[in-house]
Image 1 (tube, helix red, strand yellow):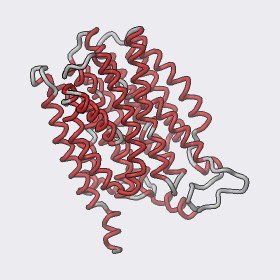
Image 2 (cartoon, one colour):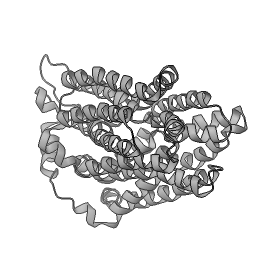
Image 3 (tube, helix red, strand yellow):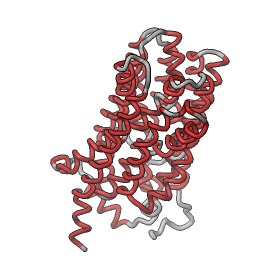
Image 4 (spheres, helix red, strand yellow):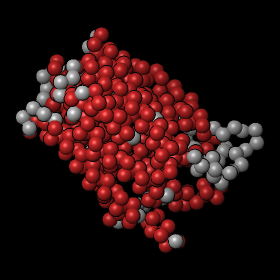
Length: 418
């Protein structure tokens, strides 16, 4: 392990704590739309598909931000990138609360996309990859863990404030909470890299740092390979499942006969299961790697939509729906990180992660649109066809990612050495 420096405690753990709390706030705020969705439909009389385009705007902008993520960070720095995401996270809620048309929801969704691209998965993975060589996977998993707790907490808070006041006021309250907590933490705790504190990465050496700097160029020759695009498409398909469920948990539960407030509360329980999913899978994936993670998420991606559709049939199905949703929850947030690391290594992580995570973000752009489009095409009677379609998509996405990992240069290098 590298010499950190005399009389200097390693600051990376403080950075990880700061990132974790910021993730709690931003991801919590960004994943509550499923709670507001039914209330917006009831009061504004918009069609589900029209409102679903808001999620498309959000994830499309997140995809674009992730595509140019490397250049954004180089231009303004990692901490300023994260701070920008926090500011836009609150702004997108303010715009939702002030909205008077579907167009305003789309504008708010676009602002949410900037936040999603700048203040969640990509930036946290990049910052912590700079700080940790040893314990990297564990630390990133634990830093991402509060995403699910934040989603559960903000969903619960939102549901209660909607019932006490209205959905517009609830949006303003959540925006204020987010800014008060996250902005000071970003300014105080988050440091861009060990060099900013005169330290080395945990488990790293100066030679490792120099090697990464040489390899971390702006060129992306990997984009000329079939493996890269198979991985991108596979991530897109596999990562359709969780946002497709997350944005429609309350809608599907209400569709199968569960009361509105109960559906909101069960949504909160499902997202608490998501937090437990992060806890469990953080240690499991460390052992099974990117391939194992892909298989786990692929299988649960098949089962979770079916269980959700059956959730009105009794407590067992409802419990299974919450549990399986919890296991799928990390898919959207962690799959790209583990797959990129296994396929391309730490040296190319920063350059490639944003582009490949863009596949997941692009999935978020279409997930709710696909689910509600199929629902409306079936006559607004049942979400069954939409849920079974998500299951089928999960299988194909899993297969494509596994093929891409097998064809990746790093896997080829390992086989050659053997």
